[in-house]
Image 1 (cartoon, rainbow, N blue to C red):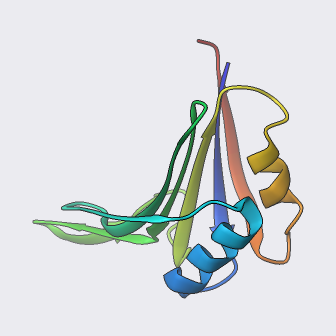
Image 2 (spheres, rainbow, N blue to C red; image 1 turned 45 degrees about the horizontal axis):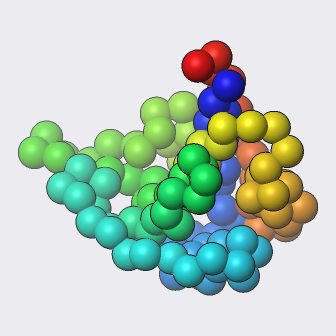
Length: 110
């Protein structure tokens, strides 16, 4: 089973959200960039788990649009993919409801 979770950091500042994640997850962020998402932070592949922090606005040749169309007003979007229930990363994120709001969770059978 794969579980995809979407969180909204409770800040508009991507650097502050990155710092919160480094503190909560005890993992260093890696700055990344791609044409569509722009600058973002990745927390690497952690035993099949991925954490990525993006701006809430993406851009292409047609202009700007929400990174996640279900949450167009989110300044930042945090995507997390886990392979099993009870991940320590999801527990760390869920334990800090003052910093991260869970927006959505989708489950897929492998």
